[in-house]
Image (cartoon, rainbow, N blue to C red; front, top):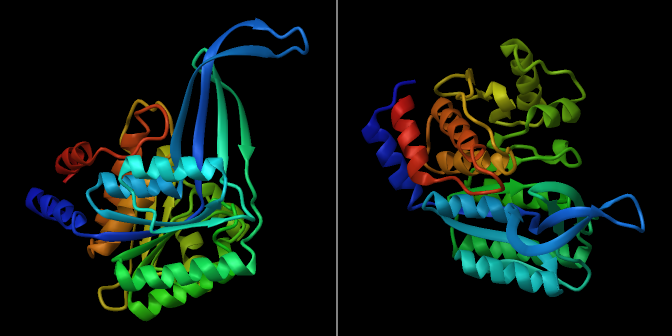
Length: 337
């Protein structure tokens, strides 16, 4: 489709007046960095002389950071532990300018933390501290009550389910919140994982990557075949009543398929822009953030996919998990119009 520079500018202005409710698994990305110059005498493993500690917001919290970076208001809703790492999570959110109005603390959970051990600028080990079972009935009731309240007080324009299989998004929570959203007429975007893949029904936008859609549907999907991608999308349209399917294809770009009774069905493969890739971490968070804001502002599905594709590629040019740069994205969108 053809979109003018003025229309792109107006779209980003509309992002600035949008509210996004992000529901899902939050975590701390902890980096322990140092120098390696010897092997341990206790076991054949390198010894990292620790020089630096760095904690960053991860998981659904990184999606909230992307939403904020694009000028919109992010309302983050999750369950964390009543622990030291939970205190750190709230501190990181405060420093990032994110509200904790949607955060629930539980004595029965721990705050998910991924410890990355970096030696001589190379990741050597990762240690995950987490509980990945579903929320118990008390915590489930608490988060549903909190979400219901946020829908009334904050009136979000779109909801994102950001699923990392850590237990916040159980089938019961997904079904209840989806019903709330449908009743309120709020579009819902989903970044799924395998565990709850088929639990998302009646969703506006479903954004799996190639591996997730293949495993979730138990079929082989060829990223180089538009027909194969469409067949997978059609299964989701039919079996899960999904209006839009956007499959991210890594270096091959993204595929979008949208069903619309009024304007007709559309589908397209949007090729990736050639880039120097430094790190793909967090690219999916950026893609779902841009796509959700496009949903909130009524953007055409093809341009939604194109802009999301650009944004995901941009963050891959930088090392580590970083939110998208709004002004670089605007500049690339002008170039690609």
